[in-house]
Length: 464
Ligand code: GLU
Ligand code: ZN
Image (cartoon, rainbow, N blue to C red; front, side):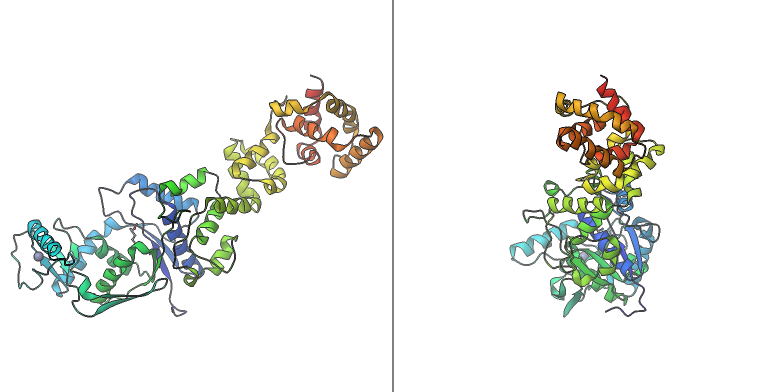
């Protein structure tokens, strides 16, 4: 479709009237991945022309959300309201060249038109009263309408939806400029997409009708249309259009729930796009594999269980340095603790069920002595088990080389000489070392804590 010389430029164009929700995040991801795949450019355009509904908080939430997802635009964001003059200039050019006209119909006249159409069972459309007027009175308030083609049809070749053909007599003369002088959405988007040299518009299929309108405007201006890819919206697990009830939350909520950005990118990509049977993949693989032909035509369903499973996979495979920073934050650890954390992460991350769970399991490294035991841990310390730990303690004190072989040899000898099993002291020792149990075995705990700290923790409890 695109020749190899075409420099691909995509954009994400959210309206800042709320948080960056999961559907928006996916649109951004697809636009980003497509640009990355083709060494193109990914741009962000904040569509803030609705000054009433656009808020700074929403703009910040969008920027933060994209930042967290690491979907970084290749240029500073463009704020659409700053282009209003340019939009008006194009409207004036359209008036001058006769592809737009002033409409002075009053609200009452338009209401009347609508009523009549309704009563006659006809589609509610502007009837073209002003289209054929030679001049309009200069004093009356006016809107500017697009002189849409009356005959024939408009064909949109959508990269996802296929050919969309609309008879031109089905579309009326769209307002380009409101009577207060502000441009309308469809006009602004066309001008901006043109001025930004957008080659591919990837967005939700709720914009498909707009795309037909926008194509007509592109054609009338003799501007090349961008290619369009309209992706089906995301549905909830029950098949209904996604709402808050389904977990259609802002992306920051997923951050707070402990999702890794890498996992989000993986899962969001799978919502509507596929590459064979691959469910779990890295972002590098996504970029390598991404193709619009992999986007399905039917709506994908959000599945929180799958999302969690994807997250667990990415935590377990996660970059330790990245994980360490997240855990430090969660446990409010000073920077000086990072090294210690990094010694435990390779092993501990493999047991993680979530980031919170991982943080909980790593907490033991940083406990201050004497370690406080939780109730379950206290109950596990029966007399028999305590006795065994007491018996093994001097041998541990005398162990010179504190490594896995050394500890295993010592434990083996102890079990043989005293005819006890691991279960008769291992779990108890684990609880004494951590205060709350651990997914790791006692060997690993002893190694991670080191000889001095391990013995001190055991001694605190043995001498109590
Ligand atoms: N601002 C529009 C929205 O948030 C998207 C416009 C577009 O992508 O063309 O729905
Ligand atoms: Zn009119």
